[in-house]
Amino acid sequence: MGFEIVYRISGANIAWEAGKYFSVIVLLAGLIAGKRKDFPWVFVLLGMLLVPSMFLSSDTEPGRTRELIMFNFSGPFLLVLSGTYFMGRKVQWTDFVNGFRLAFLPAVSLVVLISLNSGLGDLEFTSIVSNEKAAGGFGANQVSTLLGWFLLLAFIFRIEGVRLTPYVWGDWAMIAILLIRGLVTMSRGGMMAAVISLLVGIAVLWFGEKSFRLKTRKMTAYILVAFLFLGGVIWFTNRLTNNFLLYRYQGLSTEEVMTGSAGEGSGYLTGRDDIMAGDIAAFKQYPVFGVGYGMAASWHAMYYGMDEPAAHTEYTRLLSENGLLGVIFLVIAFIFLPVRHYFRNPSVRIRYLFLLLLLVSMLTMFHAAMRLALPGVLYGAAFLSVNRKLY
Image (cartoon, rainbow, N blue to C red):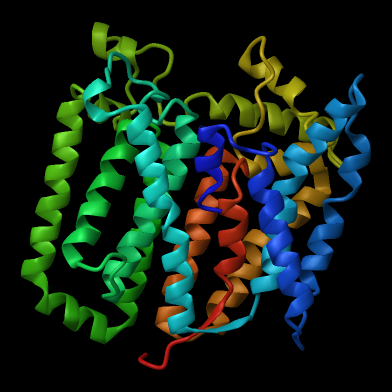
């Protein structure tokens, strides 16, 4: 999951969706090898809801039809398979920590690869748009998504008092590097998903666990130093971008900054609202089964211009391409199952980990759909039952 962008940037990918395919293979192997008594049949239902739209996709080239289906079906299918494997699966805390420590290792590869392709000293910032050069010459949104995930993972380990590197200062150095490289991509989605998920998780701990509040109060001085450190990193990065980073997060456009008058590119959705409008229009026209995988692009063109941009928001894509079946999928997968799991687990620590993984998955699906394996895998991992005897 974490290595997906590394092989894409390096040009070593076997297939564009290989990250999802490999994740599917691993999960299938786990399901076959690992017996379980309480099989989550609800995910079989979710998988069946995804099938009918396959028969609605069409193109003049058969190979193109296959690409349309796999590009849009592989993400939700991975989510279903991940949920099937992880739902209610018990894991010891030490195994959880070791697993996610391994999941963090591609962060080193990604940072090194990006830095080799585009060092900080070589970057130029002249406009308030996503900077592909700063992302190593690749899609800034996807790189930012992975960097945001690694950043969140590093903070989770810091909260838990577990080291990712042999030394605490090494962890903070890695956090600083990830933060700088993520911010200079000028793509907000990945960074904001990590921050929002982290704040919600901390809020759950603060209000739900007395021991966490007491420990936090005892460490006030260290926390203030950490905030000053992070503030300094953000200040340095903003200076590096000639204040364009600040303008980007303020939702301003290049024209607005240069001329003082609002123009195209202002706002936080950067055209996603147009694509979502196209999705909703397609859903209204074909509400039962939708228009089929990949077929919503023509509807996007009506609202977004001459091109046919693919979906950027998984939720409206499910509406347009899967119709009413997509609505049922959304209600079960993103409302019913999360709410049930949250209230079935009285442990604050389990709820906190659940929300961290679930939110970063769901927020990623909002700004980057399911172009990566990350949201599908993390959605399922959120439903793990972690045995934490300390709590």
